[in-house]
Structure formats: structure tokens, C-alpha cells
Image (cartoon, rainbow, N blue to C red; front, side, top):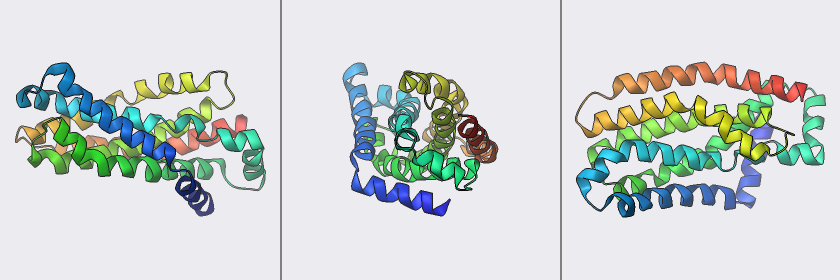
Length: 216
């Protein structure tokens, strides 16, 4: 499992275009909001929590359709599964690599996006924590979606249609935490709900993704 994770990191370092595209998408989407709603800091600050979380999650979706596709096309996925590697372990390694390659760069870009949306600086710490938890959950859900749509016709279209409804509670809790922090309220309940969601997804999503890979 560790070998698969390190292999994914090496591949990402050799071909950083996907991670860079996700970060640029995140920043550009956040930069478009001042043009759509006007430059008023108050108006932007009201939209900032939901816009920040939604833009980050959509950006994290971009590389997911190729998560298992390359290995499936060249036959290496079958070799990994027949070599004795647990399918759930393979899915967990893929999810961890996706978050390391995509989620972490998005967290690094979060202050820039928060500034573009006029989010109060007092809420930046909570925003980064909420985005970190929500992006971890999305990596797990996205891995499950990628496994379920592997080999399907127009799987790249099916994947977001499958994953985004599952991510609705994540968006609600993460945006609620950021909004609470921006308003001077307590963000801890929302962060705990995100943590509970992550605790449930952490074992269940790789197991379900592994079952889909095995049946596929």
C-alpha cells in the first residue's frame, strides 16, 4: 500500500499539470466572484464560506476520473489486484495520494482565494482546517466514485454526478464552520461534524471502492 502511495507521488511530481490545473481552477473561480457580485467586501464576505468550499471541492474533482483509468488501460491494475494487494488497501493508497497531490496544494492556495473573497483574516485558520477535512472526505468519496465508474462509458460525466450529491453534507458543515468563524461564533460543532463524517468515510469508502474494483 505504501509502495502504491509513493508511486503515485512520483508520477505526480513528474507530471504536475493536473495538480496545477486544480489549484488554478480554485483560484480563478474565487477570482470570478467579485466580477459577478461586485467588489463590495460585505457582499463578498457573505458569499465567501460557501464559495470557498464549493470551488475547492469542484477543483479536487478534476483529476479523479483518471484515478484508476491509466492502470486499467495498461493492465497494471489487474496485476496489482492479482498480486495479493487488498483492493481496499489499493483504494486507500489512491485516496491518500489524491489528497496529497491535490488537496494539499489547494490548502496552500486557500489564503489567496480567501483574500479574493474578502473573508475576514480571523476566519482563515478555520477555513484551512475545514477545507482540509472536507478535501480528505472528498478524496475518499471520489475514490469510491472512480472505482464505481471505472470502465463505464462517459465515466468522467458520471463521476461528479455520483460524488457531488454525497458531498452536500460536507459543503454544509465546512461552509458553516467558516461562516461561524467569520461571524465570531463557535466553529467547533461544525468541525466535529466534519470529523465524524471523515471517521465514517475513512474505513467505509476504501472497502466499498475495493469491492467495486474486485467486481469490475
